Length: 349
Figure 1 (cartoon, rainbow, N blue to C red):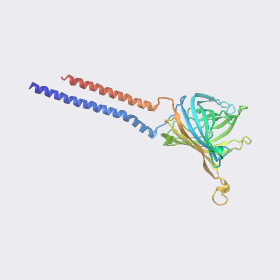
Figure 2 (figure 1 turned 180 degrees about the horizontal axis):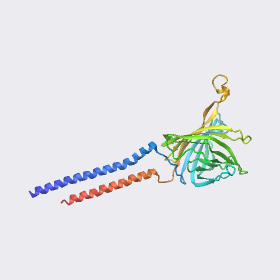
Figure 3 (figure 1 turned 60 degrees about the horizontal axis):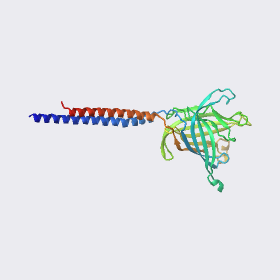
Figure 4 (figure 1 turned 90 degrees about the horizontal axis):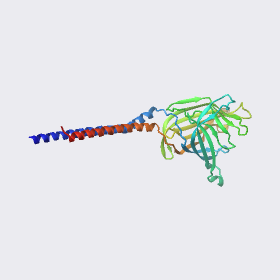
């Protein structure tokens, strides 16, 4: 009888142990599922109406682009240039002399060293010498505004290309970025500095520009699928004529800009310019020659071909850390529960 009672108690305890172990196992599986799904659910919700803040560039960050565009001398001759940009650090640019001494302000920028290598030339009519790949190397220093990554300052280290400033800087990327956001302005002038006299000369007056975040897309960048925001940027400016400053030439341009929050920079650009159509090419009845007709022409493109980002701890890492912390808590709960169950099994009351 005592033997039967002992066997009954042992059987009951074994059954309780199995049930307890099963409960612990289920709790562990549930916690693990939460750990796995938490970053994914947060990411899915963030994609719908997320705002993307201006990225922080660090010294050592690098990006490489292939830029294809027509040459100024011959629009039928296109050149592809490999541009390598490396962030050197933060800098400040004084702009008190840009508009006759009236402005006293300092632009906070990321200081970037740039190397340009003209790699290939293509045209409709080319001789054998032009058909061969050519490599022309130039260097430049540029200042990108910290709040919207606009290249407000350029020094090309070339006596034929003057040092230049945009003031106020244009806003192509109006951070924080969100789908549907729009921005427009009528302020901005491109200044150049005469290297011989240090005289500051206005070259382009911005009449108006506007930018809009159109949509979130996936771009194929050198075989890598990259999430990017497509931004439509257009502006109308007046090219100032030195001989007749009162009468300039109006310029219309548009760019499709693809910005990647993960890569922290623009990954692709398509450039267009609106040009007048010659009267003889305008279809229609006589008299149309007196009207203004224009069409949009490609001015080339710019595509990312490689990049390197210094190690940093961003929002994605913080979300991952929250998941890791929850996972550790789950392991502690499972471990403690297992120890408790085993002790009860070994020491039945």
